[in-house]
Image (tube, rainbow, N blue to C red; front, side):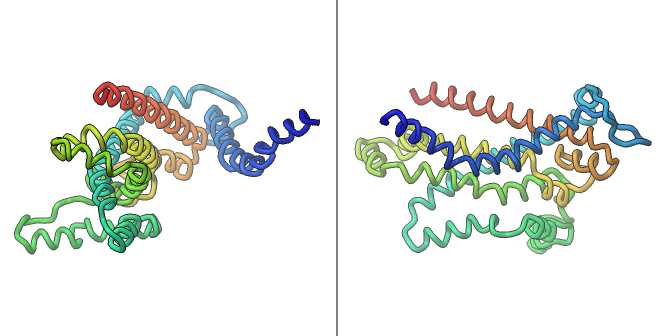
Length: 290
């Protein structure tokens, strides 16, 4: 009887999580598997996608310098956005954590505000701000800082600015979760023993919020590397990233196998870079703070 009860108790978590697992498999794993299978199909300009399989799509993407430049541009964009999100998000979160209510709640709502706006509306707003006749250029010329408009739309700089604006909240939320577990008395103890504020931050605060920084960096990097709307609207058709290149193959040339190949390689590269960087960062910071 006890064995039967133990079996039921052990099966309960699986039974309760079964609906969520089925939904996860149906909405994520199955489409990914179908995309992976589609990437091996042969494409014909006259007959479309054929029921034959080949490695030619992967060979074409890997060996073509055109796609190499697109993947390199996407990686540079993702690393730049992640760097600026860390640079802006970590100090911002520390300041927010030290604020008193109700200012803390108000400022936190302002920081998370970009997530409440549609990505298309938000990106069009940045086009208005960064355009040659936009608010930013008009202000710079009115203050006689520049004599002519600074080209920010259809450039990598504009895409980085727009993506950083929307992805900083993810860094803030990740660091905020770790800061809530930080005991202020530990920091005060370091200050009372004569350590400088910078040394207390480096030896006490930073090691404890490092997991939040790493998790936030992973989220920001993955989202910026796979971003589509912002690079498409701010960067334009000439400044292609991997997501816009896959979109063009799917809906422009109707070469679905090649578009699926680009999408699969983006997923593989994204996962590999995220795992590799997170492990490297963990080992390096562990060596520094030990």
